[in-house]
Length: 307
Image (cartoon, rainbow, N blue to C red; front, side, top):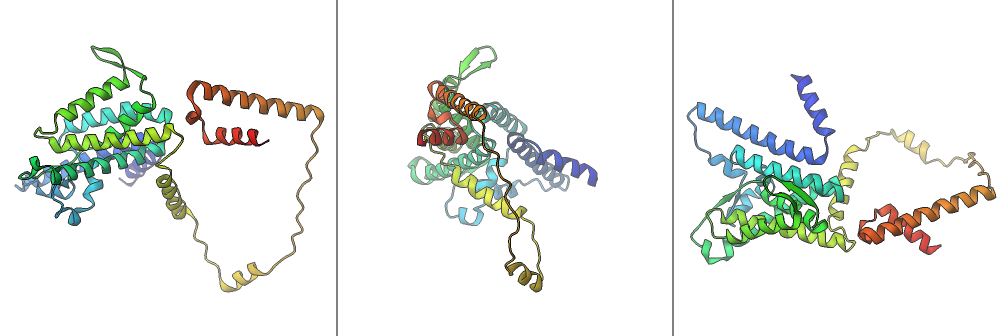
């Protein structure tokens, strides 16, 4: 049994972020429904315990279940709810990572889910239509909508093949989806459609900022890197006398190896390679714009201008 869990842990840890998100959603679904099966075997058929994982519409309940702002985006009611969301996540996530990073995918998923939950709460507590209504919400739809619309804003004319229709641009798919949500804001699943719009807005804001050369998710990614880096640092214990020994200054007898000066041929070759690299970067700017450059390419272009 331990070997099986070790194998699962290894495969999960080495899987891309997109697959990890799918694994988490599927794993949570299986675990929750196994619990439900066990409870039903003992004639405990109530599903009220699921409310501790879903976002409540009542603001007075939320402080006691604040974690639901995160847990709800990994919980699904039934297999079709899960299957539909995971297919959308896989299709659009696969396109997303062609133009953004894996880290952006995971952070935008969470931020889109949070944006959807906040708009859901806003709608239920501001619009008079919901005055005598209460609701609970779960599902990954809002998080996935952020990825769908970020991808669409980045490459609106990217075409995908749809059954019975043929090749369709992302902008038309996203347009149809958002129109359906706008028309369904007073349907039985009104809160869910408001959440979809919240996730879509988060994805649009991220992509528009990215196109202007600003990564609004960078602070979150950097914070995560620092936290993970801190966990992975080895903890080394020193005895006090060892610490005193390390603090004692010692003469540095090491010498840096001397570099052989470049020959004229090597200098011309290096300059030629640098010029070709700058030409390649400029061609990329003409085709895709400055925002398409990687941080390394931007730094090379800056250094070339400075020189």
